[in-house]
Length: 169
Image (cartoon, rainbow, N blue to C red; front, side, top):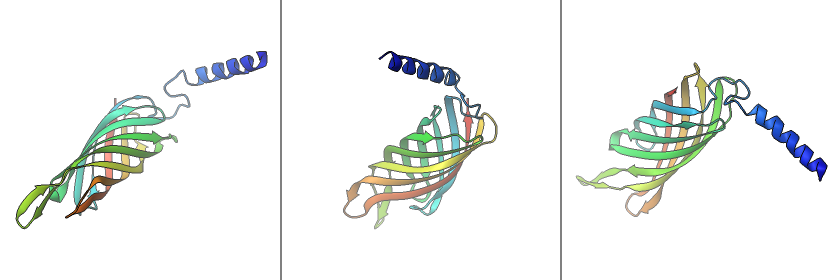
């Protein structure tokens, strides 16, 4: 029992000093803190440009973020919250994301517009390149899947490919 307590204490001492700093391995742009960003790209479901903004909080191995996306042609609006798992390699940070949200999707049939709004789940991934300690470029793919199946138009499905610029405070 004494040996187990000694080993446990040694591990705690090692990890407490290694992680005492927000940036334990000296990796650029890996400190925790809030961030904001803008992005643009292509909405495969609408076959039009897509524009968005995001804001959130960056932890060392993860992020929490809120997004708003304007999806071109149909004037669709996508609101999502994402949980992101990430790993830092010097200036490059690959990541995977999953999130939930809501989409407003007006659809016009026979000169009448109906709103087919639904809850959505989105998942995807990307890579972020840190230009400086506070500025990063982001390349991202997300697949958005509606949770409601409408009999006359089906489920909402969309693929988003975006490039963004982020600023970390």
